[in-house]
Image 1 (cartoon, rainbow, N blue to C red):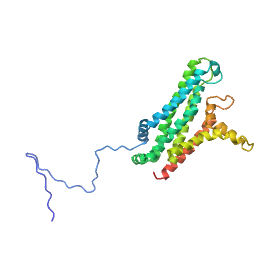
Image 2 (image 1 turned 90 degrees about the vertical axis):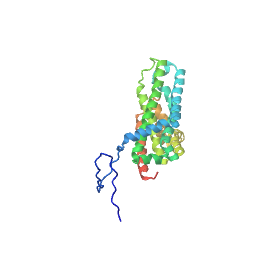
Image 3 (image 1 turned 90 degrees about the horizontal axis):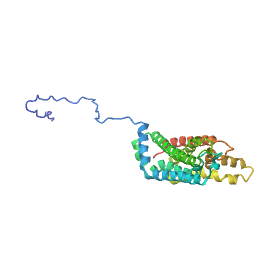
Image 4 (image 1 turned 120 degrees about the vertical axis):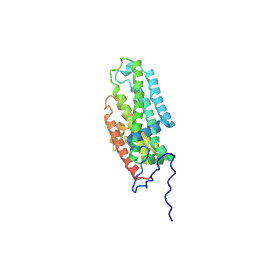
Length: 283
């Protein structure tokens, strides 16, 4: 047998409350404001990550040490006559050949380290739109890598110009932009490879192969006449020679634009593959 609803006692002097039964089909409104997520939230999250981990400090610190340190050391050992036909950023080239490995390593760690620790599950739970997370990683890394690279190359160029003022009439600002763009794209390619392989050591090894194998193989391919053309193409488009063309070290060839275009195409294809695999595979 059901009991009638008991109303709470009214306060002295207050009117008696009137009980209202709950309305069928009523909806609950949360007092907490709900904000629709967008790419900006993912970018903020990835920026917090990349500036919080020690790997960023170590890799970028080593990169700056190599590019600026080696660049200033070489600039101090040269004379003004050495820059008659070359830009002032030439000393930065030698450090950049080694420093690009640092950006490749950081690019791999940006994505593969989360798979190694299992934190990728937390990331994709907080942001189920997987493409948004990967896009944010690409954007944040590229901006950071480009700014740091351009600063290092530009600093060496300014320091060299101060040491040997008036000895060169070559425009070196373009080498700052192209050099920073090239090594930053290598880092973005490393993120795409890390996303596909999901293993830090494997992705770093694969990227080292991309950089080093085309630089070594031409010495063997050019021995035979049948493979000589392949060897010559590898020599023109491998990473060290591409940077040399960008920095106008080889004055008789292109300015590095074809090499940049090729790297952009390869990076775009790797990014597309990373998006497809990220959506199709389980975490």
